[in-house]
Length: 441
Image 1 (cartoon, rainbow, N blue to C red):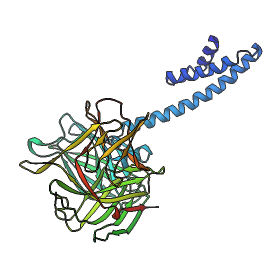
Image 2 (cartoon, rainbow, N blue to C red):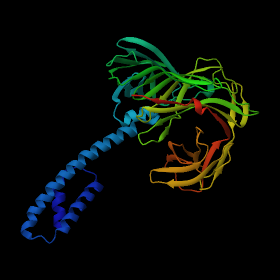
Image 3 (cartoon, rainbow, N blue to C red):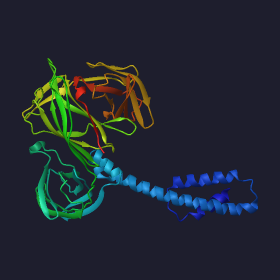
């Protein structure tokens, strides 16, 4: 069999392929051949040619798939969008819907590179990298669309001795972009980096992702107490869903603690899992909209949600959360330190919240960990898992109601004694009657 192995390897000695994959494929061919050893010598040469032909086809497929997989993996791992962007931009990278720019400009001994671009009817995102020895404290640039300036932007890390450096690799965002043409001619011009003025100018074009779903006056929910929640406008693009909402709530009397008005947003996946959206932004023109323990009669918000999955179904419910903790003051602001409740990640563990959460089962899978809880099914949050040795946290990804239990999926969690569950010590007032389910096209 040694000669047979050398014959096969000699046929592909000119082919570049990872050694481990080559050896595995050769060994598979040899295994097939070994099972055929009883064949006569007169058939062996024809058999060798046949196996060699099949083997070369396999190598060709292996080379193509290895190259494509390696290229895609490298692009994802090196992508600034994937490293620093939200889950919507990460998904656009994984689906190959971003444009590789790879444009460079050098001035004042500072090199700026535009890496990637993405454009839809909600946002323009451009990733860039700056090569200079000093920390970057501020950047100033201007965007031009079809020759017309649409705004000069400055990023700063802070002021004075407490300034926070800006990453050398970062993402520039611009919105709204609904008025941008499908193939705009874009120019991004950096004017100043730190105290250095220069001209780092880039001209390029991007093809807009035109998928768009927009609807006004989508839904209005009101309860018997006159409280209501409405979704006044929806704009959905491949990377984001943007909502305009109005909320009027009445809080229960609470003797102590610090209260926030919040909303829970989940996307419903094809398999029925409810996928968390915790990384979303909220803004309001209402005065004192987010003041602790004080809320306006009506809260008008713009909510921007990065679309981590390609779902068109969402569930949104408003709630109050009242934390236990301590207030602290500085020269510039007032802050709060919330109290934590923690317990080992073990079957039978109970987090002694105002509404207790009990662990009834744990499934340590190869890729994910699923924890089954007995708990109030209306709660909009679940425990976080933390490794106290490394301080690494594992946020819940999705959940599904299964009878009296709730199955919550986390990233793969190691089975160690230092692993704990924790939540902030809080009470929740969830307005389930005001929940709105969104079904888009």
